[in-house]
Image (cartoon, rainbow, N blue to C red; front, top):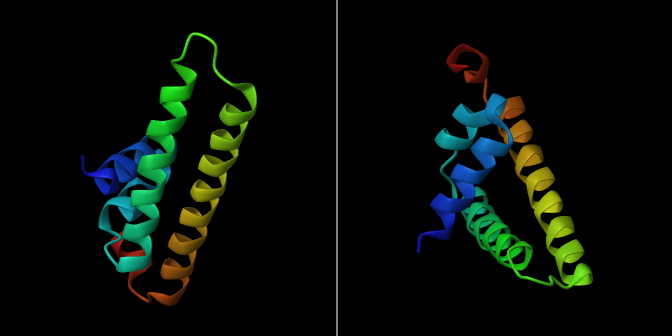
Length: 90
């Protein structure tokens, strides 16, 4: 399974106003983050789908997903701030 693509797609659903930036971002740090996010959201969904999910484990995955989302948006903001053409492409 391509966790990077899963993460990228799920982040675009979560933050549709940033979908173009998410889709266009293609550099190692962001790609690694998308892979980690893909693994985290699939793991979280798996725990959610259990008959009796472990509340602590679910909370841990929710927190991890939120942290990765925040990190992703920070990276995208940094890229946009340092890219003089970013406003013209949006």
